[in-house]
Length: 212
Image 1 (cartoon, rainbow, N blue to C red):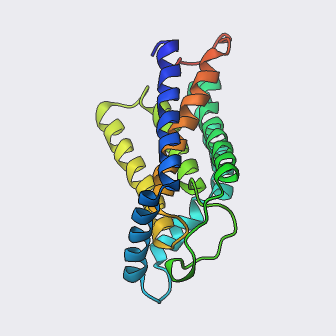
Image 2 (spheres, rainbow, N blue to C red):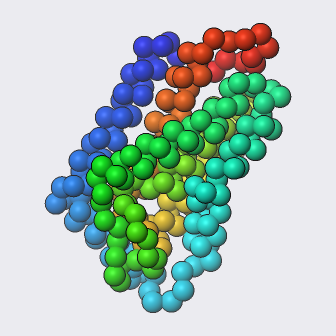
């Protein structure tokens, strides 16, 4: 992908995120998110939160995922050298963007009977989904260079299932509106795109590994 194309790719996803942020402030956006949250709350009922949702919610929260991205970078370093840094760099960028937007928009989370959890920070976008999607997309960007077609497809399916599970868990427990998790996925893509731009712009030392 040529340099200008990479920049257009990043700008395009940024425009999508801006559109989602705007939509979340409209009456139509709030009605849609509210209707989905109400339907899920009725399905969830008054009992304890399902074990799968609790597990996905806890295992892939940003504080747990951050050290995992560093471990992944260390494991991948032998093959990809500096580009192994794409994993923690993408995660860190996506989380930074997430909390900047949370601070700017301050969208309230679902509350009352719509939520089974009590959280104090803003809702939009989901940091869980942003961090998880940035991490798995970054890993896929690396492994697809060395994996065969079948393995790549399996990895893509696994990554999609993982991100979907995190997004579903966040909506199921009432921590986020539907629009928050969709935006979290977009932020994850932006995090990877921005990190790739920086890593590709750096001068490549000898033995730097394959370029992405």
